[in-house]
Amino acid sequence: MTVKMDAMPDPTTHDDAAVARPTVDVSGLNLADATFVQLFTGIWPADLYGFYAEMRAERPVHRCEFGPMWVVTRYDDVQGVVRDRRFGKGEITAAELDLAFFDDRPSPNPHDGTSMVFLNPPEYTLQRALISRAFTPKRVDQLRGFVEHHVDALLDGVAEQGEVDVLESFAFDLPVHVIGELVGVPDEMRDRFKVLVPENGMFMEPGASAAQIERAAASRIEMFTAFGQLVYDRKREPRDDLITALIEAREGDERLRRRDLIGILLLLFGAGFETTMNMIGNGLYTLLRHPEQLARLQADPSLVPSAVEEMLRFESITQMIGRMALEDAEIGGVTIPKGEHVFPMLGSANRDPARFPDADRFDVGRTPNEHLAFSGGIRYCLGASLARMELNVLFERLIARFPTMELLEDAPPWQPRVIVRGLERLPVRFGST
Image 1 (cartoon, helix red, strand yellow):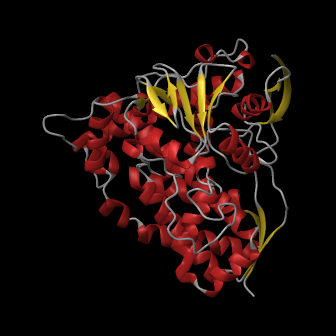
Image 2 (image 1 turned 180 degrees about the horizontal axis):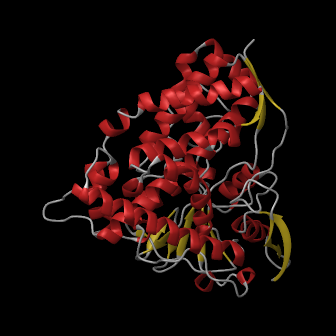
């Protein structure tokens, strides 16, 4: 396998800056492995869901030749992995996967001990229990008025402009202010975090360039320092925010250590901002590509909650997650040896016709809709209720405010990333009549 470096837009910025990113010569690999190598560097297949369909039919539990790793694509098998405690977290590095295209760059996905995403029970379950003491449904519900007010203000700006890039005009702005309000990040820090969070997220991207990883490290240090100061301030002067609640959270005699607390804040802020931003973009893009479903939703706004669930299923921002077999475990009739990595493909599971009738049809009234967009098991997304609330408020108001919405670009490009599937831009014309 050989590597060439081409200039591609940097997905952590919103300008035309270019950085060196890998393109991969996959000659010698079978078609499935060649596609997965490209996918792992953020190169999305033109017919992603057609590829998934072939994998579900022919290789539902597939061992990739280019590394000791497995890819699981059927709904029942994906759900089995995410719920089975024999599959946990293991640090995935370039060396472990023997991926030649990483060349001599720093390894992505570093385990620096500050994130619970790398933990397994009992450490993980303890931290999760402590977070749940602070991140309550009541706290999310109390944010609804703030979200409604902020959405209305953002849509006022959209109405004035008429034509906007949705990602820039409100999908980018709304979640950073909502998660900032929840956590307790001051207004004056939120704009800076808009830059730092996407930069830091490149740590998790297998195809990140050396420059992106270097920038991610600097961003992580800056965010860690900022949250450390906020924790110090809240210990001296508690407030009604998540930082204070996490400081005070107890599970028996256990409390969060300062380093773990800061790591949790980094995780919550990053996930609450960037994932929701792309949920908004992917959801609206999907809706506008299905005008008959948009018209149905406009005629019956009570369908907004089910439409949001269908957006999450149909174009999931998290297409895959990583697990490691903590012991030998059978999935789909195949035994995965202890210590080998497994990638449940959530995006494929959410299009599995064995679970969802007519799975490739977008249906705003689909029910039931037990999608896996928020994963499952003990690692079910902590912020799912917050994301759902934001999406419901936004789409309720979009539908009511703008009778006409028109895509200005038929096929806007996807960001060259694999951890988060989202668009680079989404130009739309909004009309009030």
